[in-house]
Image 1 (cartoon, rainbow, N blue to C red):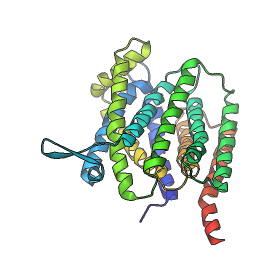
Image 2: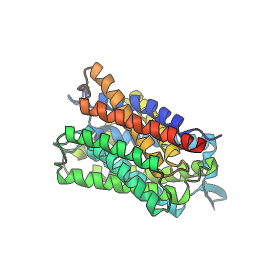
Image 3: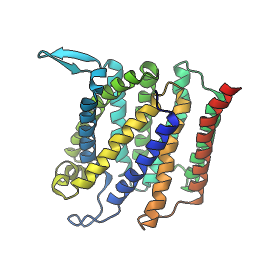
Image 4: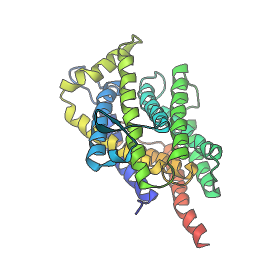
Length: 330
């Protein structure tokens, strides 16, 4: 029996809250050897590598690796991506690559950058459906509008779209990566078949994670400012920093989130229906994490605009959950 998308969104929400709290904790609490908090680039290499280890161990232990396409070499059968899952893996790696850049842009807050990146994803969801010839139902459009209004309120509360060039490039590349991933998913694997989802997961991740690590490694040897030293610490210094236990928890949560996200996005219904579930769960978990962090005196309390935006997201989720059942009953 297929897991309901509503339950997947709830599990995604519950897993994302501790992930967001831990990530913010890393960037807020002073790390004694450095005399300052760690940055996103100092956390990401080890978190990506460890999350990849969890992913590949899970794929092997669960048997999902046998659902991937196979090729024979040295007398053994090996999982291999198709040209489509390879392309999706590159798009996914692009997401992993641009997120750390969004943590390092001066003059632009991390929540503001994340809000822009999520908003662009919601805009491209119906575009992917239309390009793929999939019908977008009225309630998906209404829910998308509610989500867009909520995001617009948050953007307005943060002062508008006055971004440096690097921020614009980051948002564009992130949006491009998500567009590629959604387009490939819609083309080859949004059938709802659980076996196809398992194979897709393995093939995409076996491309995305190594490619993302290679991109970060390449950046660590290029002299482009303070980011070089941060990435070098993230690859080398972090392993004997005494933070490995917390990084293991963070990486395990990232691995769990990636599974729930993929299952939501690969639901057989249109992207305008699935993407708001995944994005709304992410934004709502961020709001919940903000309250927890504020109670821990690690961040400011959420603003009125953020709370109103979250309320609109809840309304969108309710509409997406109830409208299909009401339509079938009618």
